[in-house]
Image (tube, rainbow, N blue to C red):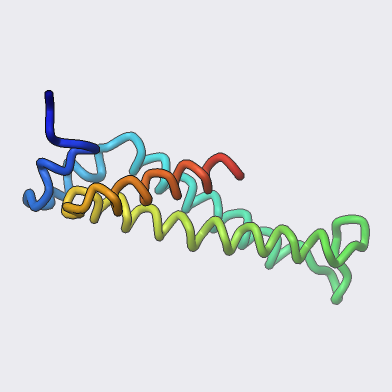
Length: 109
C-alpha cells in the first residue's frame, strides 16, 4: 500500500518554477486571473457613463460585475500561491482541506 496520501510523501522537494508554470492547472489559473482582470477593467472603465450604469441603468449589475471580477482576481492569485506551496505542505489534513476548498470554490463558480 502506498503511504503517500495526496502526494505528502514528496513534501519538502525543491520548487522548480519552469515545471510549475507548465502544469495545466497553473496555466488555467493564470488564464482565469487574466480574464478576471479583463472583466474588472472593462466594467470599471466602460460600465459607467456619467454615474449611470450602462447595463440597463441598473447600478447593481455594474457593482455585481466589479465584485465578481475582484473576487475572481484575488482567488486566482490565492490558488496560484496555494498550488506553488502545495508540494511543501507535509500535513495530510491541511492538504486535504486545501483540495476540498479548491473543489468547493470552483464548484460554486
